Image 1 (cartoon, one colour):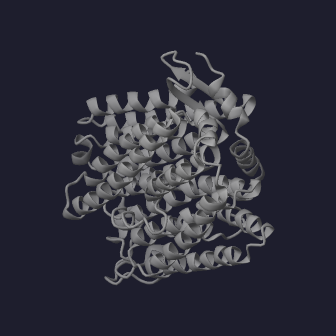
Image 2 (image 1 turned 120 degrees about the vertical axis):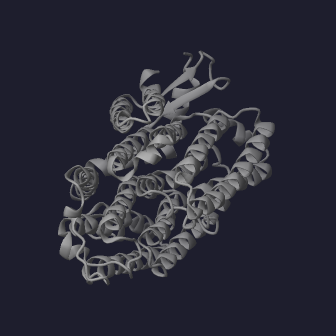
Image 3 (image 1 turned 90 degrees about the vertical axis):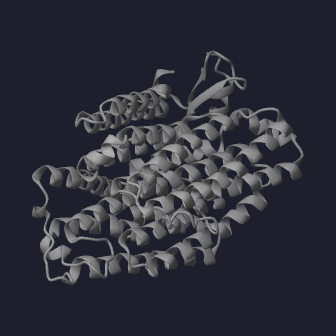
Length: 497
């Protein structure tokens, strides 16, 4: 049980301590330490799952399916680890990015609560507690989004909360209908209960979950809240939002439509297939029309979500492994690009690529650190994005889905266009004001806090790309457990303490 609860305990303890010390500099370092402990606990959990298979624990000693279940299989453990990596990088970055005024409002405490919500969503074994963790994420993310109180932040916060509340209503309605039809909300127990229930009703309920989780994931046509809100908060907040929040929605879709709703895959997965393709296309076209650094990246979140949902829609072992690999790759790359945008804003004076420039001339190191995640996002070999796209392309061609394969390649080419637009206008051309942005404008401490996590995430992207075998083997193991959840079911329903 301690392995399952340790990541959650670490973040909640860090949140409480960071709030108590929010008026002192110690609060930021408590947040960094909490993120480091979370990562260590996540790694211990992953090694345990890799060695012994899925593990589960029942809170309060109530046996499944009656109690609160925490469970980790390979996918859950991987997501907890990648959450820890992102949290540690962003918490270090926030040391320089977040001012004392925002810290005194409780930024670091809210950040740790958000990480706890994300982690809880990955580890929960029942639907009602998934709803609880979603609400923890919603409350803390709204606080982080609106922190600062600017007109743009409040406007974005209202849009963000409104759309997510609609998602919550749909989610709760689906939970109520599902419980009324099956008498259980435990995910493992639901697999058998749904199989014995009325197929037509289950398809309707599955549709409600698809829409509810689709809003949280940002799929077409339910993504409008995302580009309207992600460009307004601090860059540390944007980075953690971009890296993690929509991926919780994707994770929920993967979990529900491989474990619970497997009775009508012909309808639900065919629908997801074309939703995924539309998400890829609309997202990349939206990015091509933008000139703000963060707006471009926000639309690319939508586009890349389409690739992940595509893997779920194809539902072959290779495609599912590709979806898991893409999740890991994209969280790191997207968070890193937002961190780079923050440094560009600090030294060049903005994020509109038409109003800044000269970043390569004045800060070549930042230019190099931008190119790594940018090329990875576009799918250049040998970076992680190349392998993620290659696996999904191969899975599509194995099923003779040539149109889908075409869109995978076409969207990749359009992604290159967006990344070269940022490079050409923000990095290569001179600054319109005639100035030369330099990293030396920052203090030594700020340079370290900014560049260390950016360089670390860039190195991680290179490692995944140059040495993909162990990471893809882990993705294959996760995919095998998703397509044959017998070990998951045994771990949950066979636990008595």
